[in-house]
Length: 426
Image (cartoon, rainbow, N blue to C red; front, side):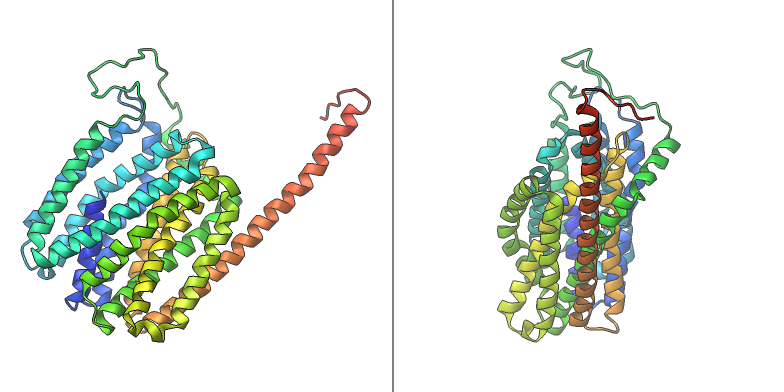
């Protein structure tokens, strides 16, 4: 789904370069990506219906990806120039995003069901690195093709990539003993199937109980603030480079994509390893501190943006913010998920992150009528700093509560074992 997703972002930068209002482009990005924010609807359904010889989640992945590819063919109906077909493009992206969001929800559910807890940091680093790598290369490549060959040729290349990866996905099994096709037999005929007897209503109740727990809100809300603030700032920063400093949309895509990609993979792999070794919560504090420092520094020195080297450094450093945040945040969100609804809960976390990313783009597009990019960036810096303080206080309180519980437990253990008798407390 990455090439189609990045095609949407490339189109948004193309519209900026062609002189469209930031509010219109912000609305385009928000509506085209809206289905990604509704993934919480698919999560419980995926958790409920997961009995198949092809695997628990694999049928959902394959079917949704096939329909997403078919929906991508709708772009071929758009005529040049695409600047005169914003509503048509918006509809095409919206329809595709419905199926792509189901596919993404299925993959998230598959990940949390199969990844051991001790490896979640590293695996999430690899997953996020693959996502960002494909996103960056897709943005740079499609932006270049869009400028050199036109929209129709870019749409053909986009759909071709989707077709190739759809075929490859079909031959990837969730487990070695899963059937490749629904009409073939499993290698292990008596393999236990995962059947949930709970109703859809119960799954939704359990899902929202997990989401609205104190521990979940204390950690998830600051993470969301960090993601949405980064989204709002980068939209304003891109528009500033294109409209104020006269960069081309291709320059922005290449600088933030190709050059940033060289560091992203290394960063997420190291970050994933650190999350497993030092603990994701401790790493989250470090990562959010880096986000806060970046946002304060880059906007306080905005007068240096006129220097291409400084502006490029800002883009490259921003491309590292998302992956390092994800390597700490994703293992934490996985650990908060409840059994029976782990797929739906993790998918809902991801959908809310996507929603905040879209809201950041939408709000940024509209407030740019009144404020310049550095002012917006400083506002985002304030929000991230508040989120950081909230996380520090929350984790400190959790440690304090646990330290109080340990002596009480030890006291009961000692009093019960000192006389060699077992104490029963009623």
